[in-house]
Image (cartoon, one colour):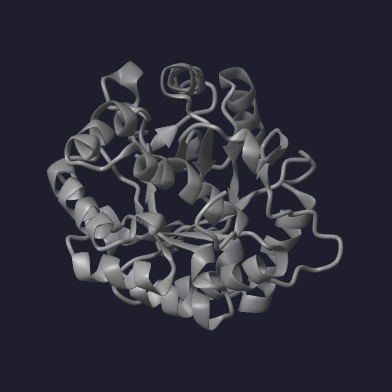
Length: 323
């Protein structure tokens, strides 16, 4: 992998919101796709919001408890440009909870594209991303450690989404970061992968999002066999898909020999999902879903692979079985 001169990204280290972290320091499981602060409210009802001040303390408390109870070692926070991203709030949550957090850059799917993405060509969009990856978010000194969640909806990305996906691939190739996608309701993953790899990004540097919302084991196997990561990242969102179906789909992928391509998370994206508001919270994966995975016969080494080693390999671009 060629990196441009002066790029500080190192394959054995992660870029977190509080600084560089050796991969070896992450001893516990990671949440591979979460939101700690975001604003996707387009109707004024305030539901799709995690406010830095109003909800930040509850988010911090949840993460601290998960660190104590389950050894939570890392959160990959995929709130990007146009999604209400607040890097300094992420740094505060990370410091107060004791959980390292990786922040993101990129653009979500088309309805949430900010004005900067309108009409900008792939080169201009790439330059925006590369500049933010190298120089950080404004003057905060905080730099993104991943590109995501790069969005599309439908089986084929729209024209603006295609530009964003291509720019993300070019920026990833230039800087050494990996790309996590948003495939709306699980659809369009194959088209995303084709665009990204066609632009020169290796499949093991790509995570295709929300595949647990797509009841299509053959698609999951195809994505995994290509070398891409398959994200089962809406665990606990029963209104979208039952965890029983998620479990069946996950076991099918594991039994097909692709546990080394699985990423797991809960994608908390509304304040009502927080434990303090009666939701399942960030810990649903550990409290509820993983016990069912274990009961189905999946051993601790594969659990560690899916929840710790895989996300670390994805983030660093390592294409090996072990860290």
